[in-house]
Image (cartoon, rainbow, N blue to C red; front, side, top):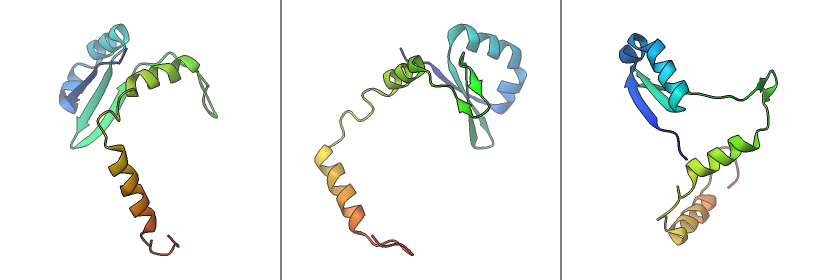
Length: 97
């Protein structure tokens, strides 16, 4: 099941902060806040986060895979591979190809 992504501007976010957080906790959704063209993604989590980084969470990985499944559907595989191979043949400034 994918999370709902809601996009709002900063003023609406600031004005509705307490209610918005309650809704997010209840619905387990994602909010993208637009502040002068810069986007901030806010989402709920129940994960424990260690000082050294995120704790390995298999359920989180499953949710991520479910959200991204089918994201490449409809991509022309042959054209993609051709583009990748052509890109590898181009020279880069300061580095060999």
